Image (cartoon, rainbow, N blue to C red; front, top):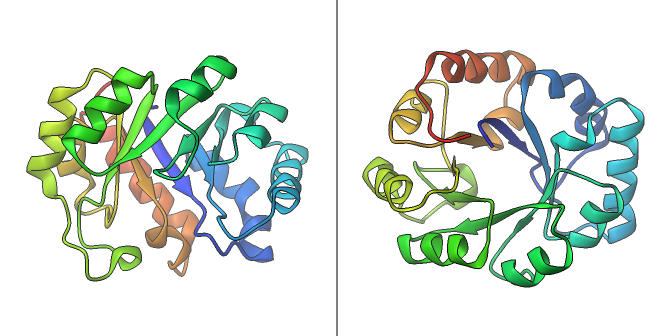
Amino acid sequence: MKGIHLITNGKLTEKELQDLPFLQHDVDYIHIREKSKTAQEIQTIVSFLLEKGVPKQKLIINDRVDIAAINNCHGVQLAYHSLPVDVVKGTFPELSIGKSVHSLEEAVHAEKAGANFIIYGHIFHSLSKKGLSPQGISRLQEITQSVSIPVVAIGGITPENAQAVLKAGASGIAVMSGVWNAADPLEILKQYQSVFNNGEGGRH
């Protein structure tokens, strides 16, 4: 799970969808995170991306295990309201299972349940988490040192602070607002990728 994880912002526009096939060359994974969309709408997004040449092994579907399995995507990202990790792993062993966590206890539990990786945050102040205190680098490092599965960090990560995240042991960095709100998403992604290529990083 090493690399750049681009997460859709929950309000994917037609233009952003059309841009994704071009952005995919500068990211390692694309997370389809569209909570307000129906299963059919998400399936339409996935079908479009596959038709445009986005490799299925780059796609991770948020919450919708069925869509991830039907399309043979790389994996699924489970939230607190999603199906339990062990249930999904037992039924769909071919999927890489990610779990969103916000504490050391949740991280350890996710690993014991069989998660293949975790997404932890938010690390820094984030536009999508206004009013909530960030976890910070020290807590991220505590997480990466306490579990053996890859940790993907999320929340307020910029090209300027990404190096500190990698030094704390994160295998990957997840980006959302920093890309979708940018005047030139492709240029920003190249900046993230440059930092990542020159960074330390954690487990694969």
